[in-house]
Length: 454
Image 1 (tube, rainbow, N blue to C red):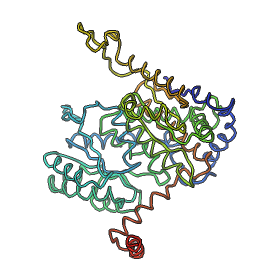
Image 2: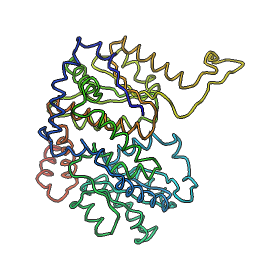
Image 3: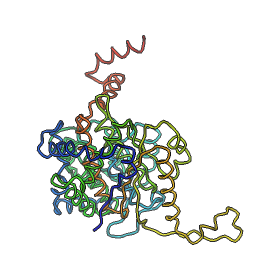
Image 4: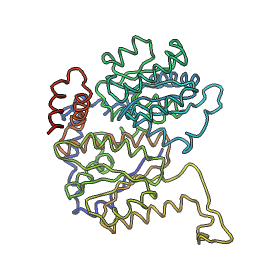
């Protein structure tokens, strides 16, 4: 079986000779500190060997619940925010038909494929109104993903969906199509699941949300969408082994990626742009942005994670990337072999002047756009890291997910921060609760009102 590849050639040329290799001792130390549990945030290292700890029986249990939802629902709504939905959405949208949202459920009498929708990730009133209106004529179920059950966006959405599902299907039937993915023992979502008798799965207490895609948080929605969670996990398992603590630096692509991005950061490159030439990877970049932004953005440090979809964004951001401030580098994900084939047609009139492309695969045109852009950006002073995926399927996505997770853990430790907490996320919540007069926030509310007056 092939594996994803990493090419640092067009990034290392912007650094001094041996600059990436010079990080090897620090990278080794950082990875060993995670293995030994001595790094900051060591109580959230459950993801590190998660892939190889997943049993086939556990995956079968997840698949059975997914099959039940697929049989009973036209629509499954995944309620979650941040790490509680981005990983699942990234995998589902990467593997789905680009126009699946226009399609009706697959007419498979045993396990039809429902429409998968995502909610609980914003407080948009129009969005929630339109969602609940759409669901009025649908047999829908809900996967409620929340460790606490009190995250505002998700809790608000789940309350609406729970009530609507019960009204449309009755409490007994609703109980069969609402699944909780939450804490093992505590929290509002756990209390609700136990009280109502929902089927539930546990979010491991030692796995943070942004590292949870290979737990039921990601696996259950992916299975509901009809994709092979065993292949996804197998890819992650193989990458875990390929990047183990005893693997030499020259063969450990997660270690090399962490070293390269930190070397570039120290050289003044403060922004990393995740680039794809396959629009299905858009939400892979969204998941990656949370993974690295929330893990590293602390103590006034860290690379800012951004993303672009090429060639589309070359017509909007291309000028800035080519000629703007040289504080950026690009990490490009390239798919070697697309799933489908489209050949460019010949046209007798040739008004657009494109007959020179006749007979070529569209992917060949895309690959030349990719190569041409890389050369132009490198000439323009933008280092390029290249990640190659043999195909876009569950197995290689599993590899990619674990590669980025391990690279993130190593990179955060190299940076000298705790990669596994997110103290800054709580700041806006405190202000929001005070402004909404939530009980227990009276002092904060008074202080904010004084600030607004002044």
